[in-house]
Length: 395
Image (cartoon, rainbow, N blue to C red; front, top):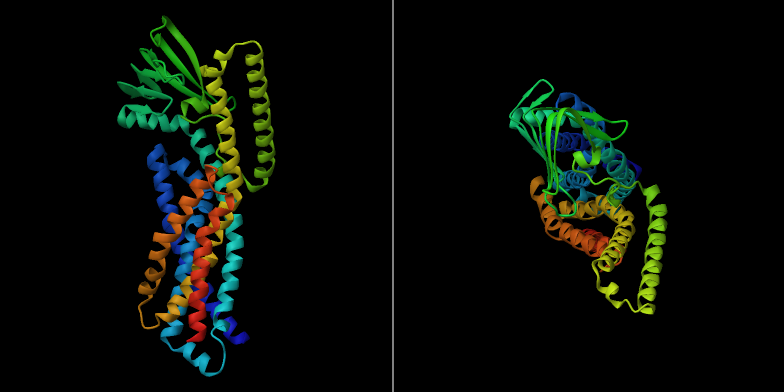
């Protein structure tokens, strides 16, 4: 038995590690290229991104690699009639399957840690490098296209000479939906201040239009500061729960529940005061709608915090579920080609598992389903895999 276990594990690890290396490199290059193109990164920022992108690349590569390794190894074993030989000796085929299932379980636990590192340390590191390289990114875009924009501002220039922007126009979009502020100047410079998380616009002979409400002309040099979050198009303090480390989710849920209780108390007190004083109109004003929207947003964030641990565990244990399908499917298709066995497993996963995962995840984030619902896709795959293994053992 030990000989069979070592034989299976050695073959599986050999294929798994080689395939993981190949797939990780491929996904890694795709992710790096995507960030470089979208943000206009130069060589130095790209090199700084490399360690932070590696966990994210492995996060995508590990489940597919596990499926590929299982179908490859068991397809070869079945094609060589080794499963038939084991049965002829009176040994259950499960002896050949248990090592892979145990390895897939260990890999799944490792994937939990990997997913946590990828969405917290990896994603945070990528954002930090982009923020630190913001000045270089903006100047690179302006030199090549003459414009730079996001959901917070837009910059257009006639040309760029060194660090000088010639005849720039800055549009600052307002959150209240009013007309954007417009700043024009003869020349300007952009200086990022990482220490104070701000960007300084050094303007020369500036004309400023505050949305049509007021105008101002400032001769000579003017320094105008913009927050780094606003200049980069990010919303300060709006970190998504999907980027929280696992250790922060529990305390964040406690704080979110306290915030919801506080909002409910404030709304109850305001409603009671309005009814006691006869100012019923206050209950239908925009300010009351804003309070309801804020309460709904707080509940939405709590739902996402509740779902996040289940999502990461379900995503990670897809490795085990994939193997539960891939190994017996490859054995049953012993005369089929390797790629045929792989796609016979991958296409149902692609058409059933991922739509179920996304659908249940969205419903759980909205509070329509309990957070445990994200395991539904894994449960379907596990039941299918158990049925396939039963048929392998019996026939």
